[in-house]
Length: 527
Image (cartoon, rainbow, N blue to C red; front, top):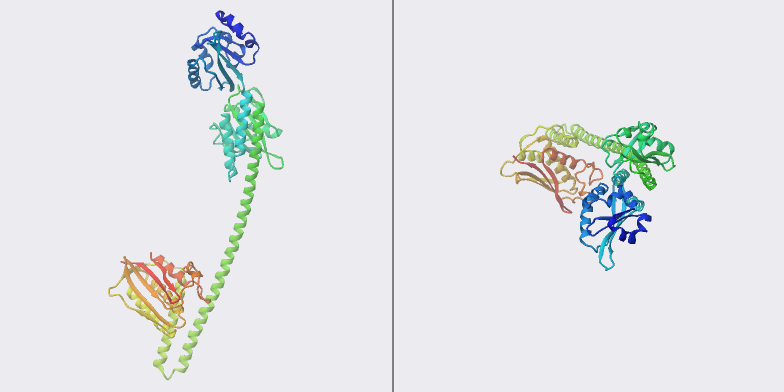
């Protein structure tokens, strides 16, 4: 105990018992912060010689202790506030460093016989264990609530949070044969952040995983077992590591913190905390493995489904090809039979016979055009063309076929020619498909009106029939392949029309449909 000589009578009366025996640091000052008395415990807490306190001035005493104050600017400002108010009572926690320590600070005025303040008493109680336990408990509660769909995100957040709390490098590693693979890194880890793996024999973690128990190194330089390890070589001399287990209890890696603050003692509370966090990380790693297995199974299932779907599509294509071939063969056989019959029976009517043969040959042309429209568009050469002539040729080609089905095709050419850049044969194929669809939509006959107009630099061909309309359930997929309103249809006609239109930067659409007919519009950019 140290007392200033001129204050001994009052100090002995007030503090003779508490200065010597208290486990708290005690400082008595006058109202201007001049030290009057200080006990040994005060010196131990702040790392100073307590006898010098009562022999030094105010600024000198502050310089003695400020290196221990974490935020000495806030501390100095608070002291000024306290001494401006002689009656102030205050209790708070003061964080010290070098080494880290927490002190509960209390100050109150000392009153004289007349009832007025004559001095100020300060007490400093080391509560590092309490604060450390409280902070670790709060941190553990926060970590327990961390969740994300991706377990690796949780692991990274946990490691970063722990590294930030301890101001240390924090790592989660998994053992793979003779190396440790980094799963997550946090804290000031610039010296190791770029590493993906590290040989296990060069790490502290080898002892943690081999012993299947927490491993603590206060100063790696002090032991022959650790002084040559890689972390020590880069300055990470202090280490706490705990093992990571799989659901069967087997060691699969380690969770650790490392830093260069070997002068700060590693407490048992920290080791227990690391073990609790390791349980959270073990659970997330197990979830990660389960998700990877599930993803692998899903990938296998997906590939199997894709293979089955590909087989199904191939089967459907073969079936459609077979049906298409049978239909074409049937049409060819009918045409050839008709031609053969006319030739055999019409030798005495040569002109009428030739006319009938020409009609049957026109059916061949229609059949060929229809088959060509189903084919994949080849590389085309677009040239300027008169769209009126293309429409007129198509109408002329189909008129005889339409007449056989009781259908009349009406086309009134516009007064002026409409020019487009196109591949004429492809445009004719699209028109053939649209007009044939209109004929097939009128089993009881009727009229088809074809019109051509120029609207906003777009040449538009409209084909309006008097059929039964397009059913609502197929309208959304009308231009997709294999969508048809007829039981014997292949659903390729309108699909080929769309393909040809898009190849010409144009469009095809169903403008209107009802029980009294439908209108399709084929459009191309005009020149």
